[in-house]
Image 1 (spheres, helix red, strand yellow):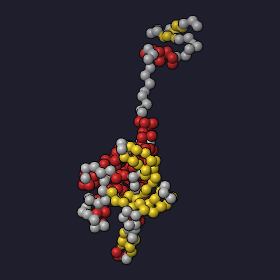
Image 2 (cartoon, rainbow, N blue to C red; image 1 turned 180 degrees about the horizontal axis):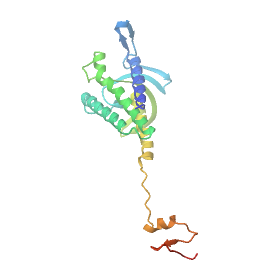
Image 3 (cartoon, rainbow, N blue to C red; image 1 turned 90 degrees about the horizontal axis):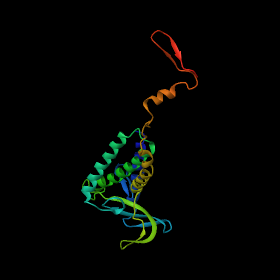
Image 4 (cartoon, rainbow, N blue to C red; image 1 turned 90 degrees about the vertical axis):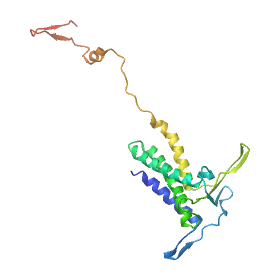
Length: 217
């Protein structure tokens, strides 16, 4: 399935940007990249867009539900389900498969953090890693249920991919979900045969004796 190239590209971009922010080392190459200090922030487009390094133990945009292990296992099951569904709908329109490939790429990107980052960076056991978030965007100053929101929750490329995939799926799924119903003729059974007969010429009927009688026009 070529659409999985989209998933692969998203995963690679997501992991590269996270490692650049968090920092990493390659001991056998004697290479070390320090990254950003946790909690630090750098302005890119003034106050509108900043790089802010935080680590998220929960779901996308800082949502926490069910604990780390539950989220990790749920992400594994969900990713497997999306992959299987992509195989089942390989004949469906490309835009539907593209949106699901984006969702899968985002899910796998964050899943790598949860499964391996704790071990890679010596911060926790397998399945207990934290997700790296760093994209910090300004938002409208609004009040929602007593909470004041002035900036969008810090996110990453994987989160953005999942959100964009869901939006595309919602926009285009209805367009392609309706199936064309076969038209049903309400005409009498003989109407089709009559319509197929020539309308301008006489109708000839042969009897057993081979005589032919014609109806006057």
